[in-house]
Length: 290
Image (cartoon, rainbow, N blue to C red):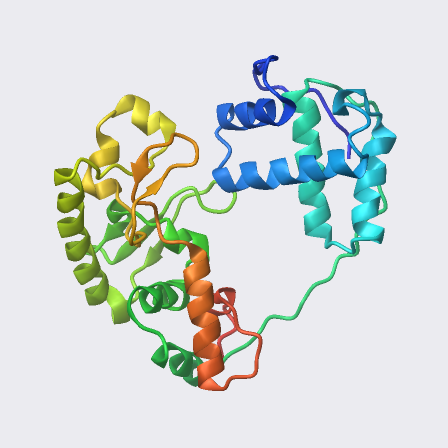
């Protein structure tokens, strides 16, 4: 892959900051998600540690990048997707953070692509697993299965994404930064109504205590400063406790963590006696049998 000049306006980070703080500053300027920020920073740190921190990245030649990426493929045995993410992280480091052009193509030893067969479950098997799930986790699993939503799409749903009158769910900023709609799963529609009513009460209590703010896009925050405290922008599946935002430091009620559902699914699968390798992704798989 060739590093090309970045056509977008360049942002020069504060040169008095440490390298990783500069990288984070540029990531946030370009509105990368927090998860992407964590992943990119992790790969950049691994890249520096691989070369034992002896040379500053801006002074490393193309061969240093190829050496690290080849090491991931040959020694670490990472997947092609993982190697590609690592490469994207380094491209970001050089193009955006360091404003450095690397001549020629980056040609590491490529990781092997492996296409795994999908796990197929019957409808009866899905019902059995669901019978061992309860509350919020069962509702999210129902959206995965009945609505065809992805896991992170479910956890990040906001109140104004649910259109009960038209039986539609609006999914914003999905994979590939695309918006789309899905039909409401009728089996959990009333449960979601109750969930929204309970959240309204909880939000009022948070406002009385001086909280009630949620995380919203920066562009929306600049245009509507009070939007973060409005009920329609609250997450449908919220965390039980308030937590401090890792970027702004504001105490907020974040959306529920996907790890909670993943654990609930694993537990339900074990209790049901199903021997297949079932994950949250399995429920939104289109190959559900009869």
